[in-house]
Length: 166
Image 1: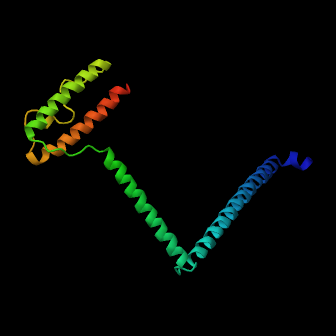
Image 2: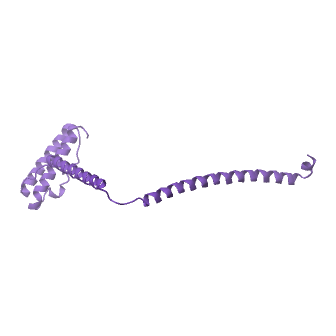
Image 3: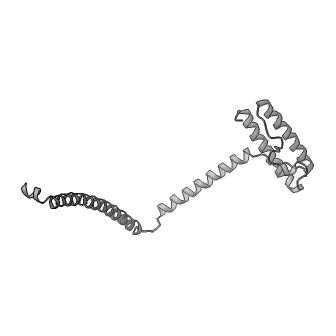
């Protein structure tokens, strides 16, 4: 005890050095633990990769049959979906550009009336996305597809108003 009182600086320095070595030892042991965990994880993943890379790639009759069955099932599901989608789509009716414009104006009027009934206010220049055809008729070959698109938009908006979404 006398030595500590006589050499205060040296004893304080040795005390701080001892605490510093303890803290440094803790950090080293913690880092070693994390390195061991990372190395183990890497080794596990590397061995799994090597195992997967060395698997035999020989096709078998069983695998081929499973692939053909999956392909057939996918084709059937897609055909069924196309049939369902085709039944839900609007038919393409022949239409002149003038008929399209008349139908567009009638649909716009009906949609505005339906919106007013539900208390929805539409912008005054709202033309269902067909602003280009408000005053200019479409090309004759585009009239029928535009008519189908107009029917689809009208149906969607009627569903929106019917279900009180807006």
